[in-house]
Structure formats: C-alpha cells, structure tokens
Image 1 (cartoon, rainbow, N blue to C red):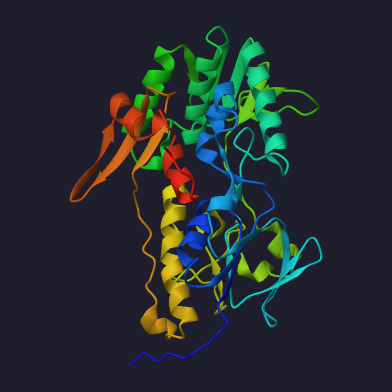
Image 2: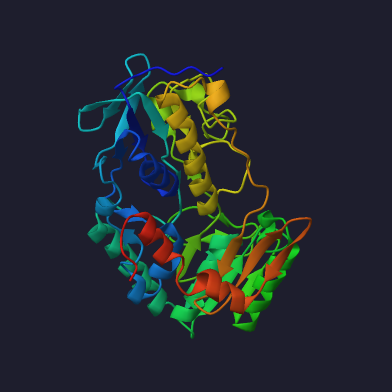
Length: 374
C-alpha cells in the first residue's frame, strides 16, 4: 500500500527552457515551487527558425516571451554550471546557488545554423536571421548539406526566398528523410524539390577541403561550390557542462543522459532528464519532448507527494512513430500519420499545409507559453 508523508519542500528546478522544459514547468506550476533556468531572453520556437532565416516577415515569430508561462513560479535568466546532488543545489554561472528537491535536465540539443538562437537576446538572434536572409536573397548559388527534415525544409524555403538562385541539396543517403522509417515521404520530398528546380544529390558525402571559405568536396573529390552553404547534418546534446561539472558518468557514448523508464537519471532518485538531452529511443522531435514533459510531471508529482516511486510513477513509453510533418514552404509538405493496426499514412501538400506548413504550429506554442493567439 502506498504511503504518503507531509512535506513543505516542493522545489523543482528545471534547467532548460525548450519544449520539454516549458511543458513540465507549466504542468507543475500549481503543484510545486518551480524555477526554470535558461540563458535565453525568450522561448525559441525552433520549428519556425528555418522560415525566419529566409523570410523577413517571420524574423521575430520564433521568439515568445516567458512572462506568460508561470503564475506562481519564476524564470531565472542564467546558466547552470553544476549540480551538487548531496546538497541538492544547482550552481549558476552568475555565482548563485538554487536549492532543489527535484532537478530536471532539459537543456536540449545544439542545432546548426540557421536553426539556432544566436546570442542571448532576441535582438542578437534576430540580427543573425537578418544576416541569413540577406545572404540568401543575394546568392547566385546555395548548397544545403543533409537531407533530413531540416535540410528538405530549408531547401524549400531558400527556393522560395530566391527563385533565381541555383539551390542544391546534397544527402549522404540513398533517399531523403531516410530516418523517418518510410521511403514515401522521401520520394514526395524529392519530387517536390526537383519540380521546383532544386538539384538533389543522393549518395553524396560532403567534407571540407580545409582552409577557409566553402571549399567542399564530395567523396569522389569533386568540388561542390556555392555562395551560401548550410549544414543540416545533425544535432549535439547540450551536456558538455555536465561532463565539466563531474557528471560524465551520467552520459552515454553519444553524450546523451542515460535515464530509466521513469525518465530519472540512472542512479539518481531526484534528478530527471527529458527531451533531446536524454537517451530515450525515439525520434528527437518537439512532440516527443512535450510528451516527455507531461510524463515527467506526473512522476515528479508522485515524488513530491511522498508516494513510493514504484507505485506512484508511470513508465514512459516511447512512441515508435509520431505524427510528423515536413513543410515545403507555406503551401506544401508531407506528413506521416500513424494509423493503429496498419502502416502509417503519408499525406501530401494540402493536408500538410493545414496541419503545419502555414502556421508552423506557432499558435499552439504561443498558447503553451500563456500568450493569446487571437
């Protein structure tokens, strides 16, 4: 039978204000004393970043203030540099110390330009977007390296931004969107891109020839030159600070935090890790991060109420396939729709435009952050 104890200590510290972190913070705001730590001035809706990097009407769309997120808790603009598990303290770059009863790692992953919040302020990040927009608009040739979701979407946005430029997408795999588990999405993406005069190079491994500038070669040694080059070949979990702080044993070989089925860091009772930063085996997508934030909220409530973790918590079940859309500009794209008991459906331009491409989920995320979408 579960037992409960009365406690006044209900301090939850969340390190990282991305999708997983804000979902968890919002869900726990009425149940705990929540502190969300993030160095950025505003929430960064990364889903909108590729369009913001090429379309000046979207420059400021990805930045949503944190001021509507919490009614009781607080958002602390700082950087965590250490965790003292014995003392239950988070150490800050500013020199401060934040005590906790439960701490959650939600620092996400580092993305390549242009899907990155450059600097610490909205002005700095927007300035970086303006720079990308100017380069795209003035380029005679552009090269995108990496044919995953970001590479496909960015190629389409660059084509829309500069119809006269030569746009090339180079991918090391045999088909686009190869990690999504279906060739149909990749075929749709390739057909759309080529129909819009984007050159698609498959089975092409690109590397730097050394020196400065965009001196690139394929695996045969042939040059791949362009006025503007973007790499979209993957992400890196933001966990170097944990290694530097003496917690390298929390990480796997890829730098992800190892967690149990309840999203707790292995070997730690009061440390959780959610979103892109952990080693949960599922696609690192914003819907996955939001789902993990929701699951962690339930388990942390159980912990704070003194319920034995084995009886009060629920195991997180990774989703092998989630609804996922890849826009080809505002009016196009492809969507993977899981269907119970049969293969996933792959939807086309019209459905994807309604689901994601036109709004890039901005109204939903503004609602999550407590801002009116009307």
